[in-house]
Image (cartoon, rainbow, N blue to C red; front, side, top):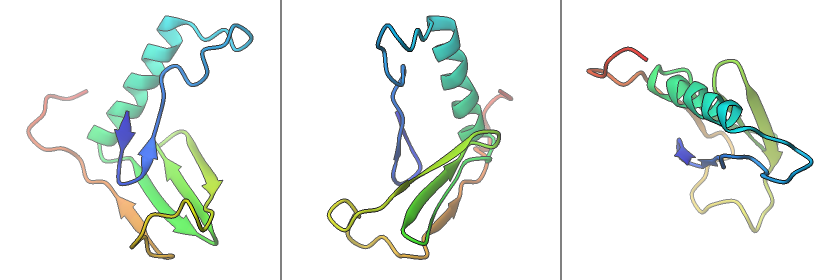
Length: 90
């Protein structure tokens, strides 16, 4: 699933037996992150060579490398996604 301009999430995140992700947990994670996007709580930004994201209650970051940085991405990029209007309350 693609969120924002550059965030890509996989469900399940791994899928190996050692991680033991169950269907109910993966579905809850997907719905929680989707509710954050629809509710306007999703943010993404670049700071000091790192790409950050937050879904409200969970967040993360990874290093940007010169070969993986998309053309035109500002070193000061920031996006605060606004709530989707007209959708039923999630």
